[in-house]
Amino acid sequence: MPRYRFAEPPARLITPKSVLLNRRSVMAGMGAAGLAAGLPRAGRADSLDAEPWPDSTDDTQTSYEVATGYNNFFEFGTSKEDPAEHAHRLETDPWSVEVSGHAHAPGEIGIEDILSDFDLEERVYRHRCVEAWSKVVPWIGFPLKDLLARFDPTSDAKYVEFETLYDPDQMPNQEGDDIDWPYREGLRMDEAMHPLTLLAVGMYGEVMPNQNGAPIRLVVPWKYGFKSIKSIVNIRLVSERPVSSWEARAPREYGFYANVNPEVRHPRWHQATERRLHDGGRIATEKFNGYGEEVAHLYEGMDLTENF
Ligand SMILES: Nc1nc2c(c(=O)[nH]1)N[C@H]1C(S)=C(S)[C@@H](COP(=O)(O)O)O[C@H]1N2
Ligand SMILES: [Mo]
Image (cartoon, rainbow, N blue to C red; front, side, top):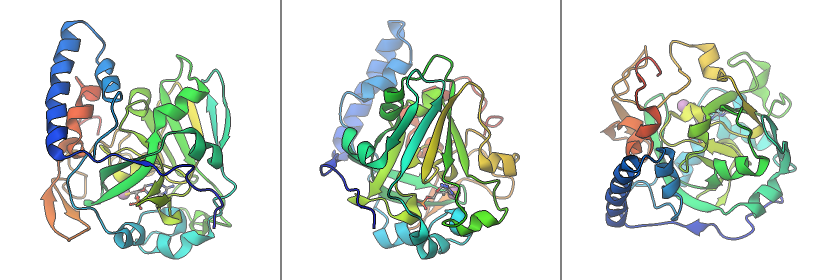
């Protein structure tokens, strides 16, 4: 059992749907005004940050049992049940994350300091896997941009690269070649700085279960689940676009952007619908997983079929 715990109970940020809708129309107005005033579009995303983030979805939450019993965490095996069975082998305390590359103040931070220094919030996000299932999970975490700010990225930092722990003694499937280990992921800097992008350290009110990526993982709610890398030990600020593990393995199937998009099919299946794990029902998949109001501007002018 890890010794770390939350310094304070995370703020619960529940806002009724009506308030959210109202806020969205206010924001849309601000976006237009910002454009008219010649402000950079990024100002729009930043303005979302002034207020606590509301519940982003009114979907029924997935049960704790399903969210922690049906996982992808290939380091522990390739079946959905393997992580729950084997991830207890992962030693998450002590743990630290190294931030390196194009930063004025590169360095390392321990998990206890992460838990005490950043304002933890609960955010309910829909989480959609490229395999066309989805969960709705109350994550506990804080914006990635708050962590990056502490290490002071330089203007050469155009992308962020993430790496999971490599230790086959604890992660037995790293002996195999399902992935060119360690698991790697990447984001463009503006994606990394977006206030929806979380570093999650818990879920359902408790510290992160091992099978979900303890002690710290990424959650990027508008992208397919494989972007949300688990058990992070390295964060690198880089100038070139990193190649993520899935992209390296099958570049025709998994792109760098991996934005949820019902209009762009995976070569082996369509992406138009998804199976909700809480009831097995199928729903239509929404572009950007339903977070388009917040993130579509990041991809303005880009061909999302080419940049899938
Ligand atoms: N290190 C690592 N991170 C990972 C994975 C993995 O195999 N290894 N799987 C990804 C995939 S494909 C998905 S869908 C999500 C699953 O997260 P969950 O188990 O919390 O639902 O984790 C992502 N992060
Ligand atoms: Mo996934």
